Length: 289
Image (cartoon, rainbow, N blue to C red):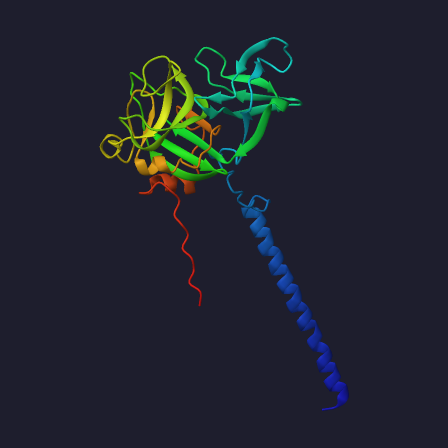
């Protein structure tokens, strides 16, 4: 075969490759056109993940104002007329109150007050020592549970005895006012006296006021069970084990009593509440090789 003929044959092969490439492009265009036709001419949108629903949460830290001397309290930071005088101590213990608002030179605090007296007051910032607490107690009357948070993490979800229908536990924003020896009818080694004052009879009286307490109940296994109950005269009752978990909570820590949580708990917190112990599981440590 002469070189001229071989070159001629090689020259005829190139159009075949070009035709094949054109066929591929044409088929791709047809397939793309069919795709756009079936999709209405618009590529399908990627599925967008649903927005997460808000879950119940508390602040990781709260400010607490502790007094060292009697302080004049005011209805607002702009008024000049005194509303009351706050003592430095309550039943022999320092008066520690949650700080719920601040403006330059002033702090708004929660106080112990019998309704309908105001449960908040403004004090000059210079008259109090400001600390902070990571603890927050929430009593959920709908599910009859007490939730203890520390730095926004759920540390305990315990069944609780709350007020019966005739003597309901009052809803509101309160705080840990006193840590005392429990009443004779209760169990445990201490009880929490909250700042909640009610008109009626409870298991604790302080300075002539009926107070709401959080205390251990000797009959908790039968009265409260594992789901909580509405059996008390207004106070909150726990088992001795659950009450003892409140021991680190200092004076001035917030105690909120709510008819129901404004949001659902997170799935992780729901698992804690559904667990047998009511506390987060301790992660297992990996064995070192």
